[in-house]
Image 1 (cartoon, rainbow, N blue to C red):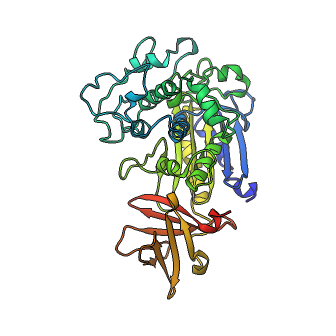
Image 2 (spheres, one colour):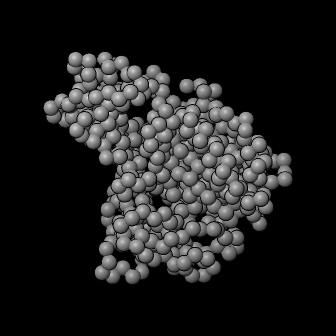
Image 3 (cartoon, rainbow, N blue to C red):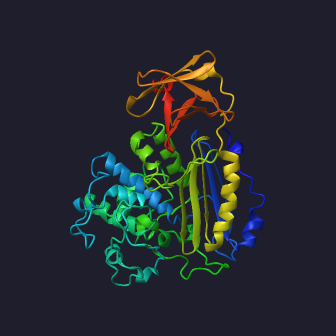
Length: 437
């Protein structure tokens, strides 16, 4: 795939920036093949001529949660953490108050925003007034948010709140004995080659000429250029769109079993709704609508807005970042255009039956055999009796009695992969020929 095929239509972007008073926008588009397209528009600071470039860093806002979750899952993979263990087993510097006799809160629930902790949005601080994370958790010192408490039954429902990731941040620090910024650098940022990203609160001060200044609605610049976020896991990452798509593509590869960093099972859990019918996995926003399947995260901090998503059916990731609180309407327009261009897989209809017949492997070596019988596809899973699949006009195949939907996807000249959907959960199986390579 050439970088030209990745390039989105940006002709309307300058007009939208003017309408919404957005000084600067940076966009990156990447493909699992390694091709990348990047572009910067407008200025790092409103009213100046310093241009936004591909290496200009922005506040990644709540995309920080997505990156922190990847790091937490790597700790799960190495046995440092367990998703379903009570957080009290790991926390030593701070403890969730009022837990006596109550149901335990787990690491999984923190990642999925189902722990029922205080409803909090973090607005940031002037650099000389920023509290420590422990003060944020306790609601003490110069903290402007309430103390973190359990306010809903854990596991009862989804409620998005930055407080879950503040607890996760402290938990990861306590479990490893390493500062969060150093831990994330060695665990995630360096292995994923996110060279222009950092959770270090000093990062923008160390390279002010490469950081886009944040702006309130209407174009008013944030005093000092930006705010400091002690809640790093929730909202403290500095990054570029190019770096963000590197992570999303790594997760997409992991879901296919192609990552050297994260195993397939954990990647699948990351991209699986943790509440039935929900749109959030483990640190990941999910959209599983037909023709619009994507995962990633959005973000809004004081002065900044952003999104980073991957469309797994086409193997394409897109990230866009702005230095304005008014940037969301512009980002919605970009995302809609991206949905139209990249959401659908390269090949989904009129699958040549003979080309998709064969063995595929799901998680843990679970085999799925596809055969052609009397012009119809038959599926046999794990040596069970084969069942006939009925073809839909849109290229999908269904079993008439089971909650089972199958479709075959390919990108460019790669082998077909089998996508299996049951009860709203989608998994991908690779052909045995590809497994052997």
